[in-house]
Structures are given as C-alpha cells and as structure tokens.
Length: 474
Length: 156
Image 1 (cartoon, rainbow over the protein chains, first blue to last red):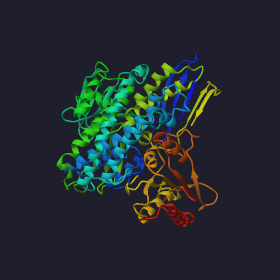
Image 2: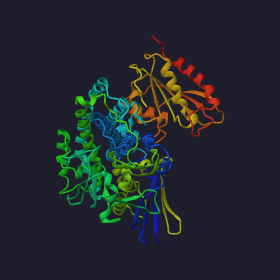
Image 3: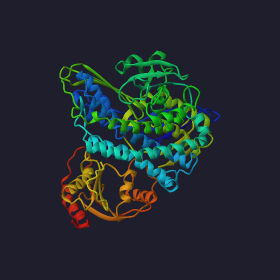
Image 4: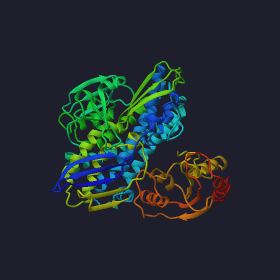
C-alpha cells in the first residue's frame, strides 16, 4: 500500500508551492516532487501592448526581483530598436542590478534561511521565527536589515522608488546620475563591506555544523549555466552564456544569449505550472542544469574584484572540480554580495557614470528582441516578437527559478530519501525537505504568479485517502 | 517606499497598503498627503505596501509612531484609533506582512526599544482593482489627516 506526505504550502520561500512525498508499502520514500500550484499569465496578457511599455509592465511580475525583470525586458526592447546604448546607461543599469542582487540575497540569507542556520533545523518551530532569531542573534538580524537597506536605498535614490520604479526604459535609463547621489551611495559602502566581512566569517566557521546537510542537500551532478564576461569573470548584466558539466569541463564556452533556443528546451509536466528547462543537446530530463549563485561561481574563472576573489579562492577549495552541494548556494550568495558591492564602488568611481547621455532613441527596427541578465536567482530571459507597429505578438520568459526546476525536484527526492521516515512525521524532517528548496531561493511569483498566503499543512495519507498523520503550522 | 523626507526621526508616520486595490490604498494616500502639508521637523513619513521587518530600525529611532491602514469591517468609513503594544502572539513571516504588534515586538527585540505606537484604521468598502477610494473612505480621509496632525509636535 503506497502512502503520500504532502507539504502544502512550503514556507519561507517567495510564492506558493507544495511538496509531495510518495511512500512505499514499508513506509520508505519512493518518490518526491516539488509542485508549483500557482500560475503566471504575463506572457499572454501583454500581447497587443506596445513594446515600450514592457519594462514597467514586466517589473510587476515580482516585488523582489523587479529590477532584474525590468532590465531583461529593457534589453529585449533595445534589440527590437536595434540600437547601441550610451556607455553610462549600461553602467547605471549595472549598478541597479547589483543593488537588487544585494537586497535580494540579504533577504534570502538573513531573513529566510538564517533561522535554519542560527536556530537549528530541529529547533522548535514556534521559536524558529523572527522573535527567536532577534532574541538569540539580534546583531545578525540587524546586519540583515542594514544590508537589505543598502541595496534598497541605492535603487530608491537612483530610480526614484524601491518597488517597481519606471527609471529603466528601452534605450537606457530615464535620467542621469548626479554627483550628490553618487557620493551618497559611496558613503554607505564601508558599512556594507563590514557587514559582509563579519557575516562571511561566522558562516564559514559554522559550516562544519552542517556537514550532513552539505552532503545531502541537492548534492548531485548537473550542468551549471550563467553569464560570463570576456575575461571569464563573474557578470550579471552583459556577456555570453557559459555551460559547465559536473566535472568542471566547459561544454559551451560562451554562446550568444540571443541564441538561447538553440541550447535550451522547455518541457512541460501535467502536475505543475512551472516548466522544466533542459540543455537541449542532452535531452530531457538528462539535460538538467542549475543556475544562480552556486552555478555562477562554478562556471567563472575569477570573480574579478580583490575581496571577492580572495573568498572565491576558498570557495573553490570546497570540492575537487565543481562545488556540487546546493547547500553552498547560501555561501555563494554572500560572496556575490561582496563582489557586487566592490563592483558598485568601482562603477561609481568611474567619471563616465555621471555622463548626461543615458538614453538612445529609435523606433522598432527588428521584429524580435531577446534580453538576458543574471537575476539574483540566476539567468533571466525575456523574448518578445512585435508587429510593424511595435505591438507584442508573442512573448516567452524563462526565469531563474524555472531553470532550477529539475534540480529542485531532484534535491527534494534526495533529502526525502535521507531524512523522511514515513512511520511518523517530525518537524526537523519536514523542515529539511523545505530547507533544501530554500537553498535555491525560489521565487515562484516570477516563475509563475504569486497568490495566497504562506502556511504549512502536511498530511500523511494512505493509499485510500485515509489521514494517517498531520502537522499544521502558520 | 521608504523616503527620507526629513532628518527628523523622532516621530514616524507609516501609511501602508496597496494603492491598486481601492480602499486598501488609504494609508498610503493619507501618508503622502501628510508629507506634503506637515513641516519636515514634525515627522518622518514612510509609505509602503506592507509592514515588514525592514521598518524596525526606523521605529527604534522614534518615540512616537503613527500607523495608518485600511481594514475590513461592517461600517465603511469607520475610523478607529488605538494605542498598540508589542505582541508576540503570532509567528510572523520574516519577509511578508507582519501585524503591527509583531513588528513592535521585533523592534524591541532587535534594538531594545519600541516607540509609543498609535494605529489608525479606516474600514474599507471596496478592495477591488482600482486606484480610487470609495465615497465612505474618501470622506474619512480629512478626518484621519486632522487627527494625525493633532498627534504631531508643533511645527517650529
């Protein structure tokens, strides 16, 4: 007699989803899957709208990675207009993307995942929340608040507001950066460095406590994909897409993001609203790959900034060829934050960033536009087709979380096999199944469309639907 | 959006809600209006969609916080005004909406203090898509503004 455990919805992630664990007759885990129970209609309802509205409309997909969507969308519009942007526009967009990555990584690391690190996977769920965290480690929570504020304030000061700004436009940005704003941002950078240094220190020291999670949290061979720059360094805005295998062999050195459909296929399964992208030449589902912080640090040759490169050297020592455990996504996020702050400082210290020329204008010159950036959670692709008047006739997006769908499902299976005992449900057991999903920091509002509130209801049911065990929280 | 509208942070006004869901935008609209009519030395005005832990630092620096929000109830336009205390009855999400009492408790735990906090709510009539307030809530808006102003220190 088979049985099912359903975790619905999963907590401390962005969006709405559930995990189903299938048990065999002996109560052992037979299978597990991660299901996204919400949908996104953006590709459909933008049809007929003019292309120049896209950055503002698409930014509404998400309240966390708004900037990344606006940038990918604006880059797609740039290619529809077939124009070359002023260098200052690229620099300003890059700073904004980096600020967005810092605030999003801070949210993921400090707010969503730190209760697991700091209070323990097995700790009382009644205390594994903001109060427990604030009481036991107020200094770390305060650092999280400050680091998130650092990223959010840059967005607000440069783009006018933190959420859904309309400053990123096709052809560039709406207004140049003034000296006062630049200096204001620069004055906040030393604190960001200090926060990252001390939090990298404690996290690295504490990683030995999580050796079993490191061993079992999404620790398996996959491909890795992300943007790299011409030097093979870390890149979030421009660049070519590189693909690496689990042994560290580069199987695609750098293909043009505009050719993504030659390399990436999208499969559909009937039990989830989220698609399953795969690397085409290896087929589905063998072409499983990961994107995001872990993937980015695996595929690059260097980060390209002094402090981040020091950390990167340590990161590369974690595994022989490629760092495979998804648990290290958390570590990679902190390193990326450090790199992002260094890049922001370097860009702001360049006199060219104050140039008044920040926008190019044109009418549609191409019937198709593709824009690719690295969002906090990984590669983000916007692909539009337009008619002669520039109205959208077709749109496709592959967002970061979607790229990781195959890997997240496999990670859930791995953790369920290791930790779940079907005879009874324990809090630590279920939390680990959720925690492996949190390593990927999925943003389901992007990958589909967010609705509903987060809570957790876990049911253990027999083959005939009888309730065998139940856990409710939230 | 959190805007540094003033160097004064002794009093903080937080208007929150979704301006695209009818009366839910009441708090935001009231706060924006107040930002335009009060003196910079009187209060720090913040507008945002939801209360989150990100606001704890601003609250910890103030001695008086005034929160303005819309609520659901039987009598549209009804204004309530309550002093609220830090409360730990919930296990709030770390990133999504937090009840005001939980936010105060969090502020206290993180920074060692929380301000006196007044929560002003107006019962909404419609929370459907749209940026307009219903007639009942629109009528309540000037009363809310007047009451908030009465709580503020005098302008220099």
